[in-house]
Image 1: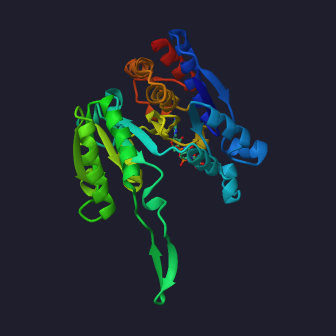
Image 2: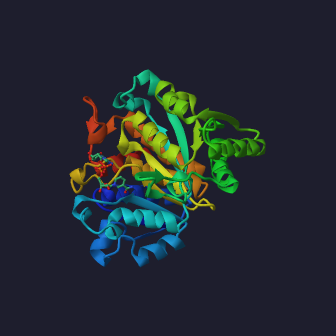
Length: 353
Ligand code: NAD
């Protein structure tokens, strides 16, 4: 299993180092990883002038999966747009054809107080948002701002082909099979024809997955239900724009950004796995960042790219255990708990495994 490791900038190298240690520890279970590190983001700009250097692109294309820390930082914010670290991120996502973004929002009972919602509403929350990443109104043509009839006129185009919808639908149904076997498809079919087609195609797919229950919800209701009763959901699948908004809403239900992993997959389940948070320049180099989102991203890699459910669960159970044991980095610290740094948290996960 070839893994391209891209630590990136800020806290990226610190948190990826812990995820790499966790993967290395699993090798004793008969898994064999070949891990190679390369530059992405600001560190790529500093070394080569390019946020997505050619050597990184080659390694990423040849690998089975990519493990990414985070990119960016204030020192690169004034560079021309094509040299900004974020360009590296967009570049690798595009080149690898990653069309499916999977974001679990899990609230471990021990961290229920971190949420702004009442603990009884969110404790034990475990949902997965599946967002289509490469289509929809974000990429549709024509688009622009023009002057028409003497005033400025802005326009975008929403579109999906049935094959694009079917492709992301399958990801959601397959993911649900590995979970509680429920898919809620989110659309706005009462107003938008594109999403009427979305609903029709989801309904056509459903008979192929008789073990999974499919329901539909309009996006405005979905936004409301996510804060009213989020535990009713298992897998939610939706288009690029609705998914952008709902996945951020869902991740904030947990209140702890340092805990949230993500996966972006291509058609063959090759993927890029990264924490949802950024490079946290404010705490970089201090050894205090929470590595759990990155460690949980490595677990997602084992599940979705390598189909190693047991190894993935072993990491996730170890994370649950360290939380139950009271280990907390600064971002999730509460009085009475054991405050630890990045490496100590990694040590605790390894011990729990
Ligand atoms: P951020 O997620 O980096 O940080 C927001 C806050 O959360 C900060 O206070 C930070 O200290 C804290 N935080 C984040 N991750 C943490 C962790 N693992 N442990 C403890 N605390 C953590 O968002 P930002 O400050 O808006 O952005 C900083 C930089 O990261 C910017 O350059 C931005 O462009 C970049 N960014 C990159 C990605 C990515 O690589 N995918 C995503 C978002 C932002």
